[in-house]
Image (cartoon, rainbow, N blue to C red):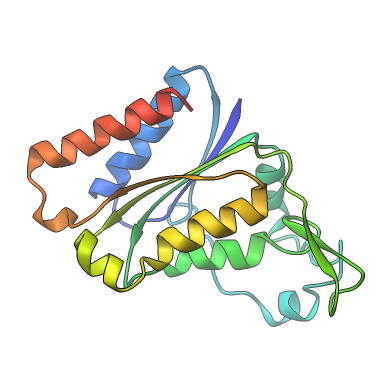
Amino acid sequence: MRVHVIHAHPVETSFNRALFDAVVASLTAAGHSVDALNLYDEQFPAVMTREERLNYHDVPGNLTPAIKPYVERLQAADAMVVVHPVWNYGYPAILKGYFDRIFVPGVSFRMEGGADRGRLVPCLTNIKKVAFVTTYGGSHLRTWVMGDPPRRIAKRWGWATFSTRPKYLALYDMNNCTPSQLSGFIDKVRGEMGRF
């Protein structure tokens, strides 16, 4: 299976980078073909341009030269894994920008009946499995009180976009975890990716 792994953390020595490396290594060891995309290393421009927004519903005119290579990588995948931290109860800006710029009409969905009143139909039927691997600075209880927006969005958006229920592997309160808890979470991620 061809797995597109997307990473969104700017620090190469971070625990989140270690998770990304573990995901890539485990999927490769399991015999998958991995297309790893580190958004920070590639300096992905997260801000949607005025032209992109004006042409958002103009399929295929909305595929600008800047986003087309990323779209092609996504469309070539059989599965997708997103590795990211949760910051301020949300996705890092670079990852949110990736979703906004790449998951456009004609790529991730199409509108049957017109852009204004149509019915959304998923297009990324090539992607059969999705997983999110993430870390939270906040405790599980505090995040639950806030509604855990990243988990809800990942699970609901993932299901609506890919017609499959995404796996969601989360380490909460990571700043207070012991080294054995951190390594235990990496082992859990390795095991899940080995069975992906």
